[in-house]
Image (tube, rainbow, N blue to C red):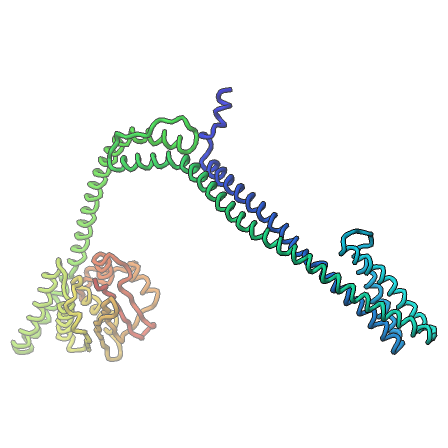
Length: 495
């Protein structure tokens, strides 16, 4: 029994039910007050609208009387079926309007005048009927006498109706003034009542909401202290079963174990941070090892073949050309050895390519036609070393070598938006789209023991670019097909 009573305590009700109940009460009170005021105002306005209704009825009665007289005269004049039909229609309408007038004997002057008008109207209609009947019977003397009586009665009726209209207007004006005064009084009273009701409702809502929000405010203040690392505060114990009571008990339980939980969390975060640092360090070391490994892949056979060509040139020509050749060879391999473990500038990359082309032209009697177009503004940009020379070498070995027309290679370096565009384009054999896909995906890899190559293939360049910039798709290959040439483009991000 005790638990049954406790279940229906106000403090145990959910917050949503409390708020809805309180707001609903205020809404019902305001709605009821508005309905009461609206009903009273509407009732008064209806009375006001009915004030001059009697004058309107009398005006309609006078107009109908005139229509009867006019239609009768028209029939007497033209004697057509249409004019007779109009007369009967007007007469019927006039009789209907007469039903609204009083027919009882009363002391009220207005009602007495209405009774007289009604009796006179019945006599008038009898005269009109006789006149029309005499006209139809072609009794000239009779319808002339009846018409005279009808005309006289018509004038009396008009004067009586006008008199009644004036009296009704006076009475209605007095009633109108009284109703206007009543409406003004009701407007003031309604506004005062509405303001009072709103004030009462606001006060009720304020105290109701305060009872709901006060525990939440206390909980928020306590939670703020806990957020400042003060774990010695708790909410006062409560036995309420609403959301605030449940949250309060859970909050006290949480505060009791929060300090220990924070210590464990801090220790776990420190361990995780240390593990992440070690993992990042290992990843950096792995990337560095991969980069150094890729940069070190230079085939020694190229060096031997080049030196042999220098020896042959020394035998065939004078020492000056041999000196230039050997110097270019020394610069080229010095660049490879020196820059194998560090970055290079685009200027150094272009010089290395020019040395490489010079060496090849010495070996192959100037068969390679190489041109450059480079923007000076980008020459100081840092890039991974040995990324252009392998592409030019690939254009020589797989593009223009052993073709039946004059082979050309063009190097173009320029800035484009937030990138530096490096293009190596030849007019050689071209390449199929499937092979382009295989090269870019790494399915085709260069062999290290190619006798006439530095050993740094396209896959080497692609891998080093991805490792260096931590991005993919920096290198693209374009070719229209067989004997249509090939263009390799590197898009270096400017950072």
